[in-house]
Length: 273
Image (spheres, rainbow, N blue to C red):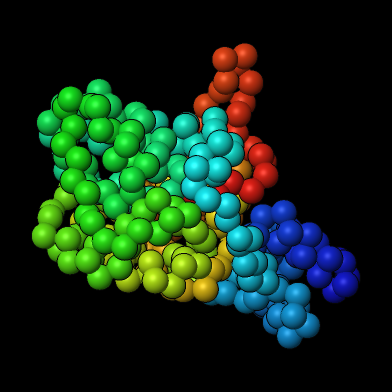
């Protein structure tokens, strides 16, 4: 295969999958890994991709501005409900768990209303509202400064409150996830709160649909390797899935069908958490 043809194939693969590895390209294109590394270096110098350890990523994509959480809760509802149900299945009676803000987190809470002796710590008014009438659930609100668009509490007071409680698990969404750039957020005042949340427990369950991957927001929160369990949908690129599992992250693909038996997962447009 000619050099120009290899470059075209590599860029097409990146466009569809968001990430390519040297080993996979070498095998599929029938050339040496040395040749693939040279191709990736040339494409990087041309500004057409971004080299990463063992492969390459699409040039950084910035996630678009997100609408308010109450509006996002109505977007891709089936996928969010499926991810939320899968996340809730990892939470047992008697657990103490933190659930963060975001529209997918609300769907996690909706599947916890029948739990017994469950303690839920949250900084999200939406999550607290879902669980307010659940007899077996004790809800602990953090307090703090209201972020109106998210109906969440952030800032110094929130972080102080988080330091006073202990939980078994943390469940949270993330604005953008990049294998190279890590977990990132686009609301700078919330970053320190996110970091305090992540420190609450060793087990970090991230709920994120496939559109979150390969994107980088303004503020760094934590490395991808900090995730212990990721729950996503079947739209996640295969190379990204393989790379996450290679890092030792447990990845759960939440696949579900609607009442007509049709698959509700797949490319449903931008799904913001």
